[in-house]
Length: 69
Image 1 (cartoon, rainbow, N blue to C red):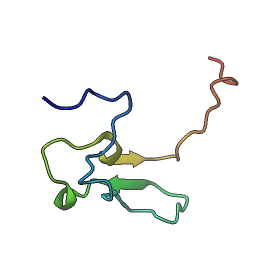
Image 2: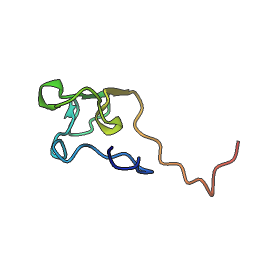
Image 3: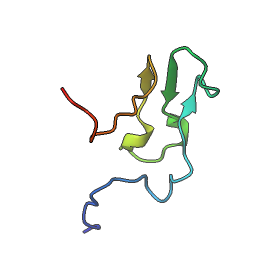
């Protein structure tokens, strides 16, 4: 039996130094991609923080206290 599930998932201690490959590391005004480094991951589960992502307009920085719908 393993450890209980934590409230915030983190990569395996064996994969703590694995990071995604960025296609736009200087954050130029264009699309950016973060690629999962499959050759560096051991195991069958990809941690959320290492999933492939495509970002078209940057990450929003929304203050929940100031947000209205």
